[in-house]
Amino acid sequence: MNAPLAKNVSSPDSEKLILIGAEQPGAQGLSLEASLEELEGLAITAGYEPAAWMKQNLSRVNPGTFLGKGKLEELETAILHHEADGVVFDDALSPTQNRNLEKILKCRVFDRPWLILEIFSRHAKTRAAKTQVELARLKYSLPRLSKMWSHLSRQRGGIGMKDVGETQIQLDRRMVREQISKLERKLVTLDKEKKTQNKRRQSAFTVSLVGYTNVGKSSLMNRLTEAGALAENKLFATLDATVRKIKRNHPYPILLTDTVGLINKLPHDLVASFKSTLDEVRNADLLINVVDISHPHYQEQMRVTTELLKELNADSIDSILVLNKIDALSPSERTDAENRHPDALFISCKTGNGVDAVRSAIDARYESQLISCQVDLKYSQMKALSEIRKLGLITGEDYGEEIVSLQVQLFPQHKERLRRLLEEI
Ligand SMILES: Nc1nc2c(ncn2[C@@H]2O[C@H](COP(=O)(O)OP(=O)(O)OP(=O)(O)O)[C@@H](O)[C@H]2O)c(=O)[nH]1
Ligand SMILES: [Mg+2]
Image 1: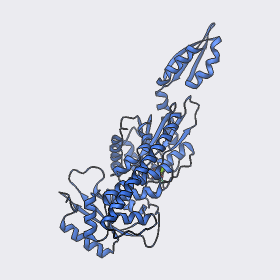
Image 2: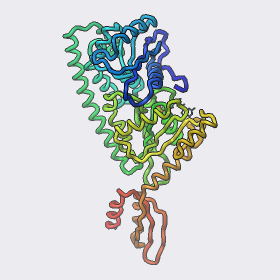
Image 3: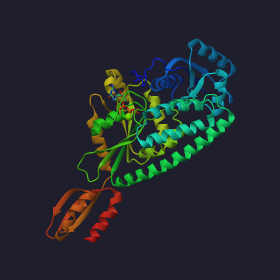
Image 4: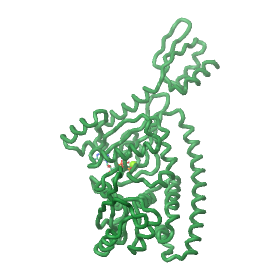
């Protein structure tokens, strides 16, 4: 992290963790070093105390224990040495690997996806976000039920089911499955409510802020709209899509959406659960791809963002690249970045530098989508003018003897509505 991250809890008895990363042939995304650094940031955000890092070159993942025997022994020694309470793997563990590792290492073992879920769970505020995270957590836990359950219950007030027997696990599984279907039903209802809201937004130009976590999306949202969105030096500060109108004289409002940040190895269940939030991205007319240009690994973060947008089928949406935090660059770093990204907009949400250019770029993209057409009105039809104004932007008026010729700019999808309106008058 390029700046110290805010700790969620600074409790003196926060759990000590050993972080494990593995270099695997053909792996994509962040380098091992950058990925472990990020894992450390995630662990701190979730309130843990990272005690040490361990790296491993893996030519083959052991299906039962992920790591080979030698590395496991090394890990056991490290746990004793650092008096660690647990181990977190940077890679996703299978449920079997997870259970076996807990048995061998006799301490809590979890992985990056679970860590992200814990953070999401702490930061979720709205009903939809809470439901989405809870669903993802339960789906993740179901095949891992045994010791994992004790973490779940601990976080929900500590029912204390540490040494549960097989029968108990069967019962727990059934309970979790029932809870999963209950939450899925709840999400469907919430989704329906949202669709009604979205319908009202159909005749709007929607712009979505996207990008890696902590790059400054919410800060840009605040600069552009005075939305008062929560901006914090915290991974995943934003979990819910906030929508605000950018005030302008256009016939259709421009709506700006702040979205959840992206990260490498985002848990699959989480992506699925956040589908409706991420729909904001998929359905946008324009994406503002925000990058923290001052981050040492910004290029890798850009790569991960591109990959995730592809996964969300959002890679063909028109987008503007915005490089934020230029206040944190030295003059030579700035020149370097400008040479490397000649088409990007350089801004600082901290100083406000460049924010107007983002506003103009959004307007220009909006206007480029409009089509021009000529509407001839008889003077007796002039009452339709106010209706036409609701559909499009009148850019020219030519008053003839019999008719008024209007130049109207509008979205292609509204041409049919205009035609019908003219027929009716
Ligand atoms: N130096 C500097 N810091 C910035 C700038 N813009 C945002 N920040 C800081 O970066 C941190 C993250 O900002 P947010 O706006 O919360 O970032 P985000 O992309 O919304 O983050 P998530 O919601 O967690 O994905 C905060 O501490 C901001 O104050 C900038 O231009 N310069
Ligand atoms: Mg945010």
